[in-house]
Length: 472
Image (cartoon, rainbow, N blue to C red; front, side, top):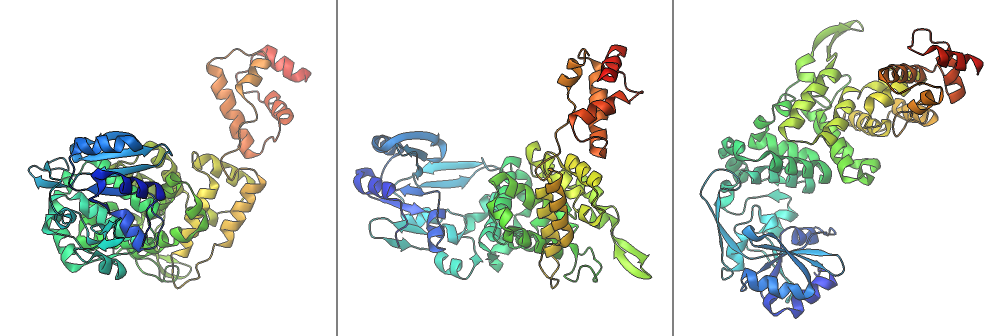
């Protein structure tokens, strides 16, 4: 096995200070999984930090971005970056992710260095000289069996490792070993030590990179850390009508929906932020059901219904996104997707579709259709197919040219200025009414917009402007 880029291999071969260097962590794990790795981490034994920085300088620009953690990021002339680290011993001295006493020790053994890593699948090393895998804790076997197991009792010192376990379970379809589950339960009270930024990072990795996102959600349930995310916990046991949802309760449905999302080609081809948006949106799409679900007479028999769960779900989704510290750029895209995820069940008139495109902004109808598709595919044993209504919505949006966003306003401020109006407080009111009329289908081009404007007696148009409109 040799997965090392030729450039990095040369650096390791021709640098004296790197003769006791090993590839570590994710790049080795990904190579064993036959996945193409992007990030390469090198742990360097037998060399001090300053000596390492000096040695790497001949190959490019060393950035001391992680000096307090013994990390040097080397950016070579080709533009590639590699992380080099000095082995260290961490001792927990205070709560929080910064509460560690870090001691660098290039003389410790590779096995001792590996023991400080969180999971056995991340504690595997690779010797670039002998091309041998150094696996001191059975990580390769755990990886083959899809088991997530902590490396050592030191796991409990950093509660972030539990959320890392969540995203690793989702990314690699792993099931936690019973002893790891128990250890996570024992430290669930330490959740408050985590900085919100760190929580967000792990959730975003789960959302962007998962291949089996339901495995990450089940990990939260098994370890009882789902208690820290009450919006998700509430889904467990919330019933659904078996005629429409034969798969089970809302949590089971949500797990199936998340797994369906990663199988959609459009999600796989999306940019990183969009994958995060769509995964978190499908996770949150039924957050409103626990509070709205009840039995009611429908179609001549008692059925389980959840009226209004879409609108309520938007508010609850916002609370969840605040809890994980999601930025507004992400939240503003997710909320309208949650609120409108049942739109395809309505009448798809031109007016309704145009208004939908406006409500979704800054998101768009194509994104909403991914949510609708994953929602409908998350109901096994029902067929996992894109509903006909979703296809019809996409077609209608294409015809109206609003698939990627709302139609731009036909009548704009510069047109009012050309008519002789001076910019002022009336501009906004006039343009607002014009755009609303455009969405209603009152006009479709600029000439029709001027005709519409001429007929509006209630708008604050100066008399000279009305005269000019009449003359046109």
